[in-house]
Image (cartoon, rainbow, N blue to C red; front, side, top):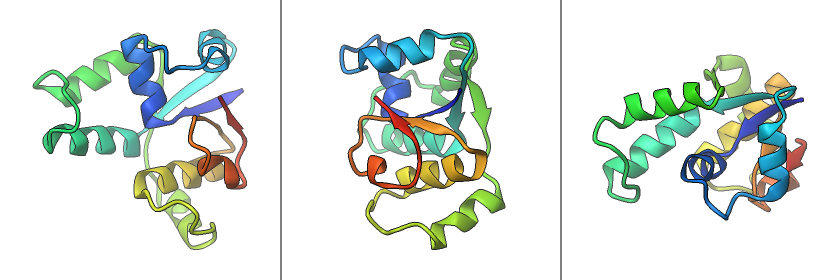
Length: 128
């Protein structure tokens, strides 16, 4: 299975947080699954860190790359073809980062690992 991590799922994974569901833990631990982290999630984390909503090491971009690679998570770049889905999806979710994850999931046929009930209303497979 190909899974795209919601930003919070990635951060909770790094923290070993109890917020991460058992289903999410099991899917992540299954080495048969391909796990991806979107460039949109890196962007979101960097924005939140820069405005003081997240506390991460000072060289956050390097920290995130090292952590992503250490956990065997592939990077998913943003492509114009994925962005084009924005015009075709319902406007249920106001968060532009989550909307981009939805577009990427549609474009690349990925399931999203997310606790977000709004994302679950879109035409993408989700797990939590």
